[in-house]
Image 1 (cartoon, rainbow, N blue to C red):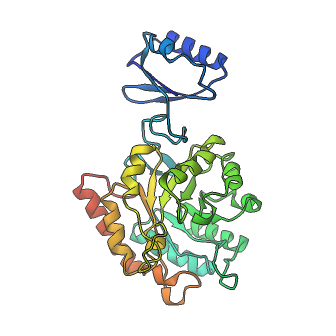
Image 2 (cartoon, rainbow, N blue to C red; image 1 turned 180 degrees about the vertical axis):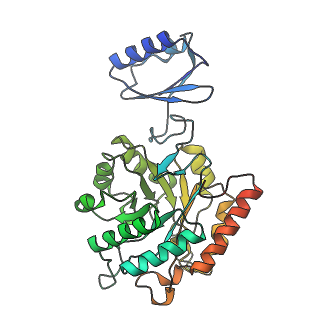
Image 3 (cartoon, rainbow, N blue to C red; image 1 turned 90 degrees about the vertical axis):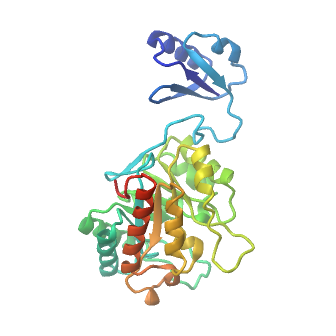
Length: 339
């Protein structure tokens, strides 16, 4: 349930209302906008008399939220959530570009790619230390050593790092990671999501390979229900009948999610398409949707990459993509990426 207060309500009356609601066992989440304040009520609201609250002088409207996701719901939190990652804001008109190789292969390699990505316009560094692979014989990542190399790249470039966690048991290793990524395979690993909810660290949550938008939002709800509001949603393509690309990039998810939730939404065209030749055009197209960020794979030598080389862009191609993304954003009156 949400209670929408009138503009400039009497502070004492607001406090009386909040005190009464709390006495009914209700937890209140207050969202203050420019012209309105919204009280989000969490708990068993079935016994709350809507007409009684509606009759108060300070109350504009009272609504029950029908959707199963509450904290992720825009009705609950009308203003866009803006998440700060090492001084780089994402959401609410701020757009960031996360770039780097699929996997960390060596200290020299990740630092080189990080420097090239930053020069081209990336604001955050991605790289996998733990790699979920379909085949048990494929490269599985450098694990804790890979995390150390990422932190060295951060030290050299100043870019916050984004990397994927595979299991709850690895959580202590991620203490110095700026953004913990939850991959498509773990998007419904609810025990992991609940544990991540106990942190205050930003979580980049990818949509499951066959997940619906509501399922994505419910996964976000698990994290937020645990007390962590810092969730970034990621559309990375879904599995369909089409086989020409690895997945089908659902760009319609951006406006739909922006209507349903206040959380930032980023696009990952690399994992969606699976082939580098398609990534630039889809990244530029995605820019027109108003997404809050991009996650793009970049490698200095894709032909010899240990993981997902066919979908990685060369640094010079990536630099051109960043220019085109910003050209689209400028044409639509939006700030350039990185602001």
